Length: 111
Length: 117
Image (cartoon, rainbow over all chains, first blue to last red; front, side):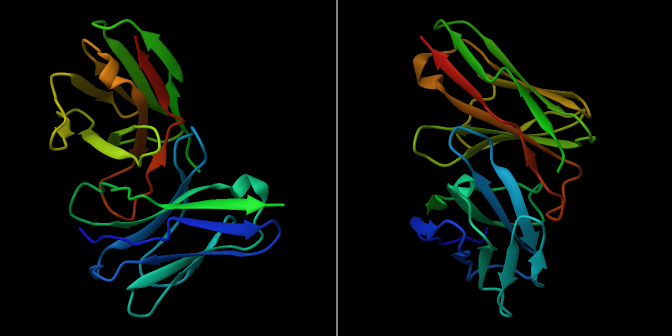
C-alpha cells in the first residue's frame, strides 16, 4: 500500500488559510487520496477525497500535483474549531476499501 | 454527510466480563463496516472488516475469538469484547460505507471509550 508522509504539527492563525501538505510518492494510478480529521476524543470526520483532479467542497479544497506524488489540503479560513489531527490517506482499490491511518498532522489554530 | 451512530459512548466494566458495542448507519445501507482501536496518543489501528451476512476479516494480530464481530444487517454491526482485561481498555471506533470501492466514502462513529477495571 502506498504510504504517506505528513509534518507532525502545524500552527495556523485564526481566519487565515491553512495549507496541509502530504507526500505520497509511491501512489498507484487508481489509488484515491483521502483526508480525514479527528478532533480530540471523537471519531474521524471525512473532509474530502480525490483521484487526480483538484476537488473543492464546503469544508476544504484538495490540490493534487500532476504527477500525483503529493497533495495539499487547504482550509480557506481556519477557525478554532479546526484544531484537530489531520490524516492524509492513500486508499487502495483492491483491499475492501480499507483505510490505514498514519500519524497525521496536529493542527493548532490560534486566535 | 451520512450519519453513523455508535453506542455506548463510554463503558466501564470489570475484568472478565464481556462488552458489546453497537454501530449503526442511520441514513444509508452499509454493506461494509470497519472496526478500529485507538490507544492514547496513537493513531487508529484497523481491527477488522465486516461485510453484511459474512464473516469478518481480521487484521493480523487481532484475536478473532476475543473480538467478536457480527454484521447481521445492512445497518448494524456489533463488536463484542469477550472476557475483557485491563489491556483491552481503549477507544473503539466503527465506520461504515456502501460498497467496497476506494471511491466510496467511509463514515465514522463517535467512538466508544472502554475502561476495564
